[in-house]
Amino acid sequence: MSTVATDFGMDKALEQLGLKDVNHGTSTGNTWYPGGAEIASHSPVDGALIGKVTTTTKDEYEKVIAAAQDAFKSFRAMPAPQRGEIVRQFGNKLRELKEPLGKLVSYEMGKSLQEGYGEVQEMIDICDFAVGLSRQLNGQTIPSERPGHVMREQWHSLGIVGIISAFNFPVAVWAWNTALAWVCGDVCVWKGSEKAPLCTVACQNIIAGVLKDNDLPEGISSIINGDYKVGEWMTQDTRIPLISATGSTRMGRIVGKTVAERFGKSLLELGGNNAIIITPTADLKVVVPGAVFGAVGTCGQRCTSTRRLIIHESVYDKVKDAIVGAYKQIVIGNPLDENNHVGPLIDKDAVDTYLSAIEKAKAEGGNVLVEGGVLEGEGYESGCYVKPAIIEAENSFEIVQHETFAPILYLMKYSGDVENAIDLQNGVAQGLSSAIMTNEMKEAEKFLSFAGSDCGIANVNIGTSGAEIGGAFGGETEPGGGRESGSDAWKVYMRRQTNTVNYSDELPLAQGIKFDL
Image 1 (tube, rainbow, N blue to C red):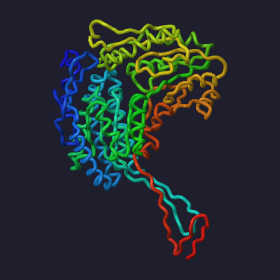
Image 2: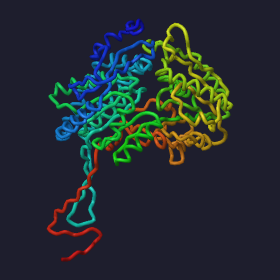
Image 3: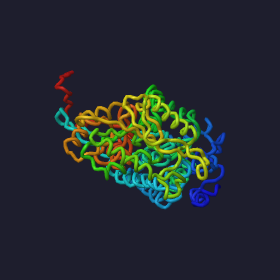
Image 4: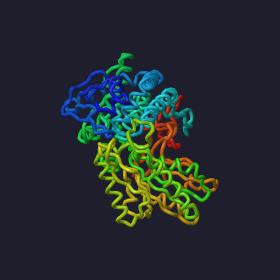
């Protein structure tokens, strides 16, 4: 354990989470399998080895799926409110372990400690939501066109839910899926990111204790670990009716195609090229914190990170100066130290992508307002710390059209009415999150209308980043179209069934058809 980690209590946190130097990466709950090759998890904070996790073999994968199939038969028969009680207990365990799990998220992934705690809070919040939902898995009664008949719609448990999550939210995305899937009567198999495997094992340790306390069978919550090949086992497996995958657009295209070929269901949460429109009436006291946190929070590694500011020409210079001034106040360093605003990128590959994007923007004619670059020296030994950059650009630039998972913010002007800004905002392929800063009601309502933002999330006077549990989370076009978390997102984890009941003594046919024998 490095000095940095020890100083912030990481050794104690790992102990509280049941993590060892080498951890089994395959589990069906309280049964763990030794696995094959090891994944070494190095922290981007200081480059130190945190621990190792064994990868899942094909034979172990088959055991996991068999256990999940068996567990589903009994778990779906448990009344939904009882399943909700399991989720409630899980939420309480997360409350008890919020500090160590938040520290692990921060240290293994690199986001600020407050963001790490916030991610665990998201897990707690979705558990609370799911507990209430467990008593509201409502169908509906539908008028029948046939006399003496009634139609009903009901929802049934789906089966095994395969979850593939990304490094940037290494615990919350799993919880978004599992908490809902469990109350719906499904069982889950989770492949967490190979860039944050200890987070996966830690979460499994937590839920395993809850399952054991309630004398529940193996297979309700399972984990597997490895590279993309392990993920392919799930996406190609006809025994898994739903694959929920979070990650890059490239990954989503492969997953979506593979699952569709076997007529499975996909829930895809992919990238975002998110913009904030800043109108002449925008309040800078709202604009600056919303834009800056959106751009640099999690070191620009959120799917909802702010990538573009579309600013009216009449206030462009004022907004630009305010944003550039705010960037000068950003403190970059060890994310476990709450005095720092921004931590590292996940690894050196991400650093290379960041540097390449800056060079491409310059080559296309971008004007750098705040220089990027890699930080060196004491505290930056991992080589993953970079400076958030601001570049004046055109929306048409090829690099602007693509999502770069790094703290690069593009500034661009618009003139005329808000419709012109909306056209620029919608002029990319990634319709995930969007925002407008305005005090003009007509502009806000236009932005929220059918003719406004084409994104799954559209905000007024708040930034693009930081979605709440209660709403359905997801976007359109390249983000994949999936919806997780709140609202009626639970329906994707169930199968819909229409029932027609004849309570008469006759059999009238639909559409008045006569069939007399």
